[in-house]
Amino acid sequence: LLKSLVSLWRAPFESQNDHVVRLQAFLRIRQLALTQPFPFIEDCLKSLYLAYAKSSKFVSEAALATLTFMGNCVVELYSLDLDSSYQHAFVYIRQLALHLRTAIQKKTKEAFQTIYSWQYLNCLKVWTAVLAANPGETELRSLVYPLTEIVLGVSRLLPTTRHLPIRLHCVRLLQQLAASSYTFIPTTSILLEVFDAKEIYMKPKKGGNNAQGVRLPLMIKLPKSDALRTMDQLEACISETFVLINREIDLYRYSAGFPEFTFRICQRLRKFCKETRVNRWKAYAKGCIDTCERHSAKAILDRSKLEEAPKDVKKLEILKPLDVSCMRERYEAAIAKERRLETATKPEFASSGEKGKKEEAASHVTKQKKTSKKTKTKWRRNKDDVEAKDIGEEALTKADEVAQGIDWSDDESK
Image (cartoon, rainbow, N blue to C red; front, side, top):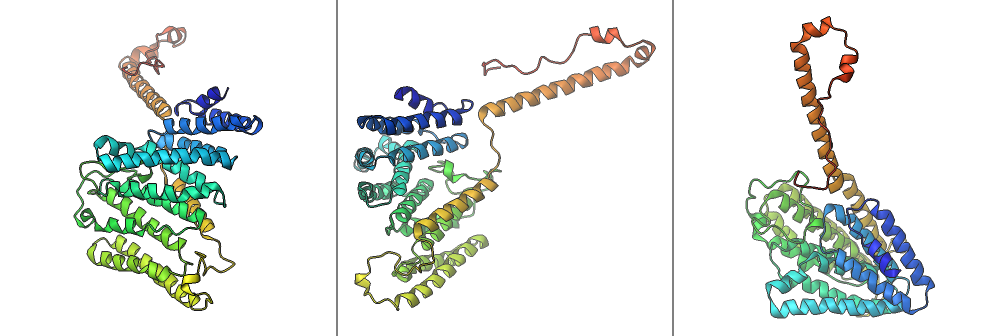
């Protein structure tokens, strides 16, 4: 029964009403995990994660929402029994670490492809979500440090311009872990390295502009030719970098060491303002600098009133007022706002099946118009004869010249 439910849960993305089938299958799996004797939940945890890992090898616009839903299902199931979840999470996170160690030691193309793949990145995402959903003092919290080291290792494996998108994915994961665990995990060094790329200061090449722009959530690396050389690639990567820098500033704004933390950020962004010739990027950088200076001035004033010495401060947000939300809540609010903006600006996307039906319907309408024009022309030529006759039964018995319509066969060669 469990095997059948898992196969329904990971059904192909193109199937009709797949979201309803997935939801019902997961609800039955969750029900079995809660009601059956203890060892059964172990099978549920293992089967669901492995099914998710097998289904996450490829990411597209159509499959992104489904993969997100499947990841949420994994998080939900792993939140039922934290003791059992820790055993499985430890094994699978260790497996990811072993793959990374192999890539660092062997430095082969196959080893790098294993790390820089959608399957590996999606597994990191789902374990980050599992740990972020259970931030309490449980055994799962002890896995935050090894998972952080793995994500940092992935971001540093190939620090090339072409692999910039996956480094930005890693920064998002690290910020999610930091916000949920109330831990200081700085990522500014990864973000500020973006401004050291020489392609940013070169004149972008013409062409390659996409009407929908570059979708970084659907990319783990840039094209091999002309990486970060077109304006849409530059705009997407620079905008994402400034979004993450602002989020990093907001996460640690109530830390006692915030003024020292932002010193390097302000220094590098001032240099970037002098080097770049794009006014929009200058505005982004100046906005970050102003935010850092404003929060730094307030932090210096507030920490001067503390009774504890700097070495005795153990709380990360020691300067946070009581009426201000914590860093986890601020992070979740920022992510929710970002998703709303993305939903509002994202172009409508039709699945491959719907797209094919629309194209066939348009082709059918075109054929009807052409046939109608031919019939109209023929009618005009014989206008005098038609006016002299009574159009009745003869019109009904006349053969229809319209094409047969949509071809419903599965043969794609037609």
